[in-house]
Length: 75
Image (cartoon, rainbow, N blue to C red; front, side, top):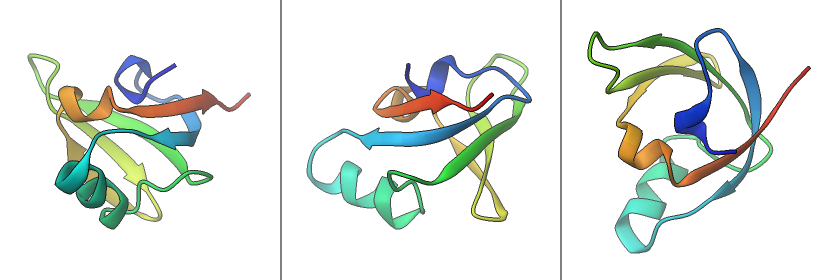
């Protein structure tokens, strides 16, 4: 499953970060590292971008970028 498929209120753990070059580095720099817990808190009115809760802070991410992050849903 990828992060863009996660619905509001669901919690997951990041399993993989894809992308290439600068995009992958930017995602990792924002704290989206494998093993990190993440939750979707809000979606914009048209569904993009999405607001995430990661490492104690809120992060807005475009769905196009979220599609490159693999996650595993937590019970």
